Image (tube, rainbow, N blue to C red):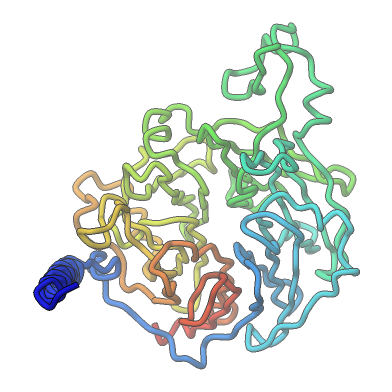
Length: 446
């Protein structure tokens, strides 16, 4: 190649490099100039806990996620799957309100905990005779990417001491379905539509395809306002029908009622939202408050209120951004009169920046702080809408290092004015996989 050719080549390469730099600079400018932050869009005042509030529960070279938490006999118990939403259940305990965590030995847990098909949920059951139990529930949904997991109702386990758990017992799964009469049998003539089981194309009863069981478990009261030994549990399926199953005990044995669709009167909204992962909690004034995830991402999260122990519910209503996201878990603090709602902040219809292919933004684990009255007034007052922030403050508990939303499912307990929350996510810059993190908050400081 002669000198003239070399010169032309150099000029061409320089031109290409210049164009690349210019385009890169333009794209960088667009990215920087159009970035949005989910926290800012909530319009809420924020609170950042001190570093000393955080403790790593478990971190490894594998995926850890979706924990739940219970406080039982002066001890915190956390349970989570070794995998994304499914896998062997691991368990740890803390006797110092989350400052340190101790392994529950694998061989002390039931063998069939290793075959858990979903994230476990934990609840303390308090009985009218003064006794207590821990309940652990794990759904058995079908997983499209794994033939090993199939629709099989839900599993549950009980513990009297928080140390020894009974082996999983299955409810409303394959064995139950095979024992039921076929569609058209006269036994179903008196069933209300909401209480009919699901039938396959061959008329056989299908096992329930249970997702996030029990996303909430609410102890009920009688007509005189006294607690009774009956609990209302919720779950959903892949068609985003939401069910309740009532837990009672007969001769010391747990009895779960047949699942019932409980939002059929609002099916259009339930279906539009793809409503799921419902949380129900009791206000000090005895209203039941429902918060739910909109999995369709066509709506914000929703709220509803019941004044009759869950028999009927107010119209499902979209929440402001300050409470929009996934897997709400709520606890009330009687000392401050405040409540804490932990969730994954996830805003629909908002691109993180102009160049993104995603149409939602998030990446934060947060806890909403406010009062039950704020939520009840918002749910029942027609003049209130989603355009204004709702609540006192958002505690920012974690932000994923990739800006994605895989975080925020959590357990929450409030003990003597201290809120202990445990969640998962890639919360530090070096994390390649989500890990389990706990945070202890002083409610008086928030």
